[in-house]
Amino acid sequence: MIYQFKIDPQKLPALTEEQKACPYAALYERDIAEPGADILAAFAPDHEIASSSAVMPEDLCKILDPNFHPTMGYCVMPNGVGYSCTVVRLPGAVPEMYDYRLNLVFAEDMGFIVEYPGFHFEHYDGLCIEDNGAGPKALILDRNYSFAELGFPSDPTKINSDILSISAHDQDIVAVEGPIDPNRDKGVLILVNKRIAGGMEQWWFVYSGLHIQDGKSAVVLAADEVISAESCRRKGLHLAYESVNQLQYLPILMEQYPFRAFTPPRPWPERYRFLQHK
Image (cartoon, rainbow, N blue to C red):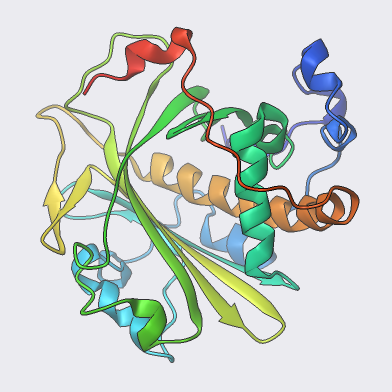
């Protein structure tokens, strides 16, 4: 079965009374935007790219070249590590939109839920509960990498002025119901925001079964852990839906609700404390 990344707005999970009281809850039951044809083609089932096209952590300095553009798609590397690269053009987007988004997702659940209805559920400080194509999971952001740890000689936004920002995090993706194995389901998420004519472009790089050490790939697969190409496909396509729907709803909210000062991230609730296995 091909996994569907859209839910009929009339069949979405019901909101709580508190969520319904949010002033922009009306955005929840909407027909979400589809990624472009190029993205859907790149993430078609059984359509892996060659592993030689993957941008690995030790190759990140390639993005400093103004003429470089990554190959979109997904694959499993010869060493068993999973990979996906999602490239989303965002006409009309400006960095301020994503500052605004951070305020929303850290302030309350609805700020996270409305950007991808049916697949985003909760957001806290370093914890997202969402569906990447295999049911609800906890995505835990464990560590932020510095530019030096990523192998850059200095701040890449100063070397190539079209690069607006780069963020890189270790992540665990685990079931929201235990038991938790601290040795598996590890990976890295890297987001590059780049200026293009008339807007922005986002490059998402996702690595499953890998961490970064001294600017290089370090495999962190458990002994019996097998990464499937299908899981890589779903992660990459999920991020495309996130991005195109952020572009759809953020301008509406920015126009209706003034930007607020960044609020402290919400701490994890007690029911998710068991996920803090480190």
